[in-house]
Amino acid sequence: MIRPVHSEKIVLVGSYPPRRCGIATFSADVVRSIEGQYADAECLVVPVTDVPEGYAYPAEARFEIREQDPASYREAAKFINGSGAKVVSLQHEFGIYGGPAGSHILTLLRALRVPVVSHLHTIQDQPAPAFRRVLEEIVRLSARTVVMSQRGRELIETVYGAAPDRIDVIPHGIPDMPFVDPHFYKEPLGLAGRRVILTSGLLSPNKGIEYMIEALPQIVRKFPAAIYIVLGATHPVQRRLEGEAYRLMLERLVDRLGLTRHVLFCNRFVSDDELKKFLGAADVYVTPYLDPTQITSGGLSYAFGCGRAVVSTPYWHAGELLADGRGVLVPFRDSAALAREINALLDDDVRRREICHHAYRLGREMIWRNVARRFMTSYAEARHRSLARPARRSQKAQRLPPADPSCWLEPETDGNRTVA
Image (cartoon, rainbow, N blue to C red; front, side, top):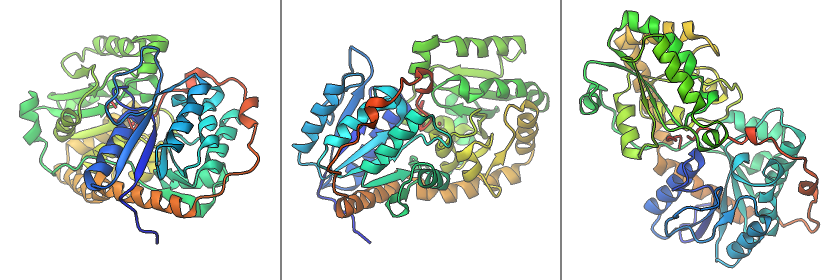
């Protein structure tokens, strides 16, 4: 096995704070976890900017890519090649990069003389031709490919042709929190005496929040002190496309069902510390998401790893993580099932605590310091086994048809902090 080399320069490419999206939060966590654990590792960041006014990036951001400008991807490659970097960590989600199906990123990858480890946050099982060709090319140009689940490994092999020995399965990182009773966190948040149900992450229609709200009347009848907290701002892309239409629809639904005392919308992008407090106060965490092919959810990872009892629809990540009694799975778009299973958990303290303790024990492998070690091993493998660049560069990206911008919402890693 190749040992990780710590005294090296790593360049991370992707979205980055203060941009507010799940991938940006995840990227910052990667940088912090590596530099916090390996004193000789230096992380530089090449962020992708999606707005004309740009962002006030921190000092580690050394070169800025303008999302829709192909020339800036070429210039970024020149910067990276001359930076002394030993490896590039590419955070890939189609919505981050410009061009048809996010194909501008291929301009950068083809010009690099540094091995690339591509971390895939979205993997489609039945991709449109343009998206298939872009991801196949990213896999081909990468020394290693990182996925967050066994389902991701299966897809990247069978659908996109990745070599099995060039794939690393590394779970979504989570903060290291002590395991404490929710009552410890409730009082400081003004939630003493309440049964707290929580969903966190950037808000968009694929979250299925309306089905959880429709489940609340049955829950409130059994537990009159129950409160459902929806923690997170509207996704920036969703807000640009449709404003706050989805949130307003949810608020009208709450009013119509007479649930104003039982639903709290926290419409803001929360800090790490604030997120930990809300997770700590949750009796049940719920992800009623609508997309069965969602390959990862940061919100789910955080809640599970912090030892919360999770009720979720069986999208790919949840189906894998919560199998064998590690959580509770309910059918998609089924408010009655959500109410039934949440009521059962709230009514059975012994079962709920068993689920929480089991999740917390398994989650220790997901804390950032452990994930950082696995990243560093992957980077070392990439350096050791880097594939020679093909002599003839593919022209596929130039023939890609226009992509549908509505497909470009970043997934929940919603680091998922408001970031799943």
